[in-house]
Image (tube, rainbow, N blue to C red):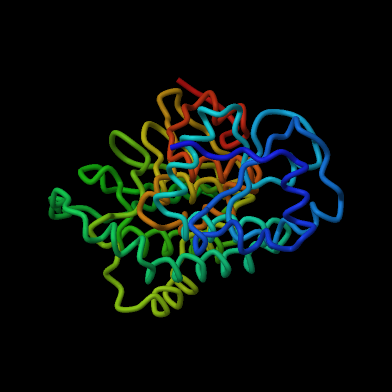
Amino acid sequence: MSTVINTVAEFECAVATGDYIERWSPLSGVPLVAVDLASGHLSPDSIRKLRLLACPLIGVGHGDADLAAACDLLADDTAELEQLAAAITTSPIAALTLMQLLRATENLPLEAALNMESLAYATLQSGPEFIRWLELPRTPVEVVAATEPPVLISRAGTELEITINRPAQRNAIDVAVRDGLIEALRLAVADSEVTRVTLSGAGKCFSIGGALEEFGSVASAAQAHAIRSVQLPARWLSLCADRTTAYLHSACIGAGIELPAFAARVVAKKNTFIQLPELAMGLIPGAGGCVSIPHRIGRQRTAWLVVSGRRIDATTALQWGLVDELVE
């Protein structure tokens, strides 16, 4: 695979003639466009039009600061570009949807941004890329019968401790955990005497994210959006985020980082690693991560995390601002 890297002049010409929307899109078979940031300067008028681009725009290398800021994500060199392009080519509709969502929600109020994320996620749930992923063979997940509540709630004075309590499933967030988190967070929101909320995970890791065995189980994408509109833990956490500290350790995958990223303070053990694997499933982060993570690290780094699917370690997360403190 070899991805064409356009010069700024070539890109400017395409924008000026107006054929750039149809030229680069999943429908045209060219699901991304890359531009050499060192090759020139894009006019302000062309930069304003980039939000209409029907695919991810990847800036390669270093150069024009205004164009770099307008790109959806950045690649240091050709090798990194090819890795990003391979992921986009596998799930081009999900990649397009992600970029459009991040562009649109960059300056929206939190609640409106969460609604848009849910609508975008619901769209992809009925799309061919997610359906293809659902049809892939996979090892059945062994469901261990729960003997304790899925979420532990402990109150000591003005402090409320919330602990995800599914260690045998590595704290995968299934419906029971979701509902337990909502119950706990609603309590924090309703009780004005609670001045500090802590969020943590029991066992070997904070959370591996959504329970895969429940993916695709809702009857329709429209119904799934309606459910998220009223039963999304992120909505309640956002209402008490200023009082909340999240404590992370080991795996924080998918919803396992999307949710704690809302907290005013995130403390991570040095063995923490973070990953957003949803694009390979034909999806985007849908537990609030398209809102919480850009708020902390910006639109471009969020897009890079989702498209690359790579893990980042705790040190990188601290440097980026995704966590606020490292501990042993």
